[in-house]
Image 1 (tube, rainbow, N blue to C red):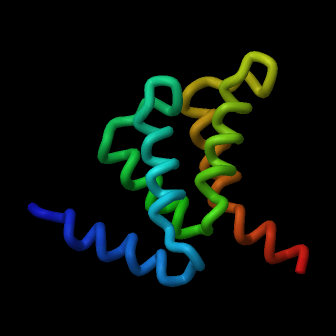
Image 2: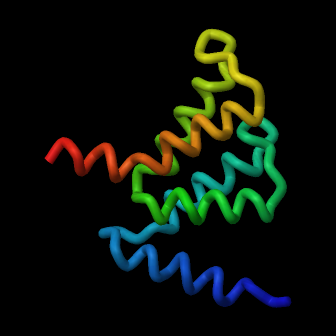
Length: 103
């Protein structure tokens, strides 16, 4: 069943909230998630998680990538693949919540 149009519309709608749009952070998150040097996820899962991240805020993708790298690093948390992904999503999705509590 074709979902590309509705998916693109949802992403565009999210971008209306943020000055400068959301395509950059979305593509950054998606590319990292698909990359073997990143999370190495399948396309569908990468699209789903990237959408969740950009919905949380413009900095969420960058926070996700930093947290995932730290979670996977031997000098960082040295988590397994699934645990590092969960850790990074938790930090990425909490971006706006944490930022707004300081105001």
